[in-house]
Image (tube, rainbow, N blue to C red):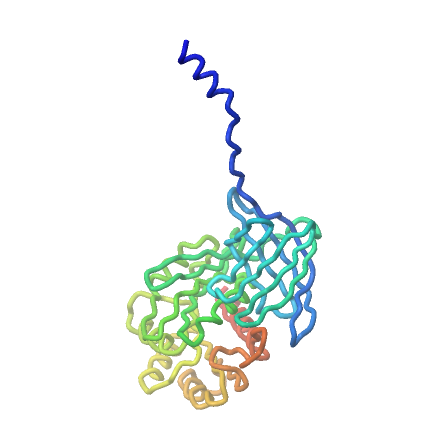
Length: 331
C-alpha cells in the first residue's frame, strides 16, 4: 500500500522541462557593412542547415571580396550569432537578432565595422564548404565545393609564416572558382608535408586526381622543387612558387622540372623582388616563362596597410587565368 502511494506521488510530480538547444534562423539576409575607407558596402549572409545537427553560414561582400568567407562553426545563443573566419581568428562577425534584422559588427583585427542585415527569403545554394582537420603541428583547412558530382581540380596550399594569414583569402577565391583547396599549417623550414596533402586530396570527394597541384611559398617552394626531382613518388599537375629565393641549386631544380614539362607559375611581391623573379624566369625558360611580379604589394601579394585586406591589382585574376589555361590544356 505504501509503495503504491509513493509511486502515485512521484508520477504526479511535474516533469522537468527539456532543454531545447537554440538554433540559428535559416535564411538569406541582405544589407550593408560600414567601412571608414570605403563607406557603405553591400553584404549578404546565408545561414544554412545542410544536415541534421549541422549549420553553416556564408558572408558575401561583392565589392570587397577578401571579406567574404564560409564558416562551418556557428555560435548561437540568446539571439546572438558569432561566426569566425576559418584559420583567421581575428575576423569575427557578431550579430544580434531583432525580428527579421541582424545588427552587429564585423571585427577585422583592430578594425570594427557596423553591419545591418534583413531577411529576404531562403538561403542561396552553398558556394563551398570548409572543414577543419586538426594535426599535431596545427590545423589544416579543407575548402571543397558543395557540388561534388563533377570532378574538378585540387590544390595543396603550403604557406610560410609570412603568408599564413593570407592563405585563407586565396583559398576562398579559388574555392569560389570550383578548386578544392587544402591549406596546410605554416612552416618556416623546408618541410613540405606534400605526401600527406596529396593523399588527402586524392581521397576528397569531387577531386580530379589527375589535376592536383601545389602552391608553396618561400623555402617550402624550394624544398618542394627538390622533392619533386628526387623521385619520391609525389606527382603534381602544376606548381605555383611564391617568393622563392633562387639559389644555384634551386635554379637547377626548377630547370629540371621545366624540362619535365611541369607547368610552373612564379609569383613575387615587393619592390625588391625583381632580382629573384629574373632568376626564376631564366630557370623556367626566359621571357615566355610564367613569372608575375607585383612591386606595390607585400610578400603576401596584398596591398600593404589596406583595410580591409586587398589583393594587388590583377593578382587574383592572373592566378585564376593561369590555372584555367593549364587545366584546359590537360584535358
